[in-house]
Amino acid sequence: MLLVKKILSAFFYFLFFLLFISQILLELNPEILVPAKQKVVIMLLLAGLSVSAALFRSGSQKEDEKKYQSSRTCVFLLFLVYLFNLVILLFFDPGFRLSGYQQTPDYSLYLSLNTNFVPFSTIMRYYAAWRRHSIPMYYVVVNLLGNFLAFAPFGFFLPVLRERFFALSRFLPAAAAMIVFAEAAQFVFRVGSCDVDDFILNFSGTVLVFLIVRTKSSRTFLAKHHIVRSDL
Image (cartoon, rainbow, N blue to C red):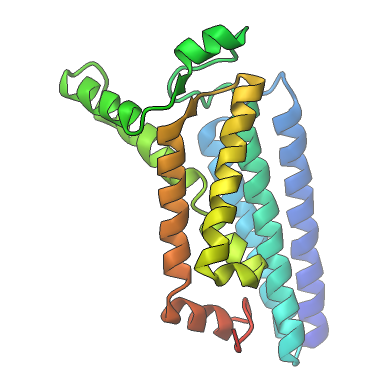
C-alpha cells in the first residue's frame, strides 16, 4: 500500500511539472494570449495536482518530520505557481490592463497618465464614475477587488514558508517592501499603473490574510496538517 502511494505521488508530481512547464511556455509565447478563465482553470489544476501529490506522499510516511517536509514541498510549489502568474499578470499580460493602461513611451507621459500619489484618489474616481453611470459596477469591482486580492496570498505564503514572519513586526515591513518593489518595477518598465491606491489595496488584502493565518485556530489547523510545526 505504501508503495502504491509513493507511485501515485510521483505520478501527480510528474503531471504537475508537465502542466506547469506547459503553462510557462504558453505564457511566454508572444503569439498566444491565454484567456483569464483558462488561467484560473490551469492554476486550479496545478493546485489539485500538487495537493494530491503531497497527500499521497505524506500518507506513505510515518514520521511527522517527513510529513512536514511533504506539506512544505506542496506549499512551495503552490507559491511558485502563484508567483509566476502574478509576474505575468503585472508585467506581461496584455489582457490585464484593468484601467486600460499600456506600456507608455516616455516617463513624462507615464507620470501624467499612469501614476497617482494621492491616497484614495483613484478609488474615489472609480466610485464617482460608477455613480455617474460612466462605467459598470463590474468594472469597479474587478479593479478594486482585483488589487485587494492580487498580493493577498503573500499573507499565507510568507509566514508559512518562513515561520519567523509570523511575527507582526517582521511581516508588515516585508509585505510593504514587496508591494513597493512591484509598484516601482511597474514605474521603471512603464507598464500598468504606479498608484498609491494600488499599494493600499494590495497591502490591506495581504494583511487581512496574514491576520487570519495568524489566529490560533488557523495555526492549529496548519499544524494538524503538518504545514507548520506544532511547537510554533
